[in-house]
Image (cartoon, rainbow, N blue to C red):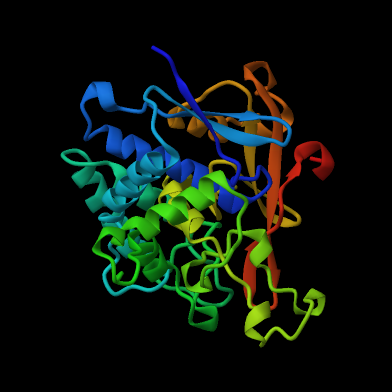
Length: 332
């Protein structure tokens, strides 16, 4: 069967948001495949090509970029039905609350979709709790996933955004035929074109290094609307479901919450992801991220030619991720 390939020019290899969006694309297409007849399934795989380095999506059916984005949008919305967190705004569950939420998701996964269990397992664990000096409680708060960067700073809360962004709907169009097409256009722009970051920051999770507000380096007054930072809506919608791949678990003696691809050192938390040259499924990518030799060259015999590493940083009260660098340039 002939395969179709799509070069995803919008997804740069050194941008954490772009990598999360790539995971989300694969997760969304996998979700829609489950609803399709076998002959219509895309069976998505990805590899990276050079000049410049970008991911290439490989499918078993040929679709236009718009139809591919339409399937991805349907998959995002299907998965987003599981993004329900009640009235909670932040990942500040107590240990007992987290345990019950995780158990409930695990029970549901046995009879329905396991996506919610995957998502919650990427966000939290009841095995690691916050350690506050001098404060002891029988039910301490859990540690959230290290890729959660929103804790209420500037009235920005993680869980409402994680619920609402993948479900994003455009404002009503005067032309009925245009209803729903704007969401498709955002995905096409994210996947196939250089990013313009023209969307409101209300849809941002702060995973894009270009959203770091270094006011001293701006060309003009940061309060001027023309210098306001923007985000890439389509990328954030994909990333919101893509982070479900990054399973978390207690590590480092049980006092840190680690995720696959993540590592703590004297400089704090960093996240690594591979650049591979042969088509790989989402399951294979998850395996590469979880491999203990990811950062030490152990996956080179399997076609991983480079590993990118991004660091979590803090500027004032806000957290962000840096542009990723190859492991060799990191000295680790």
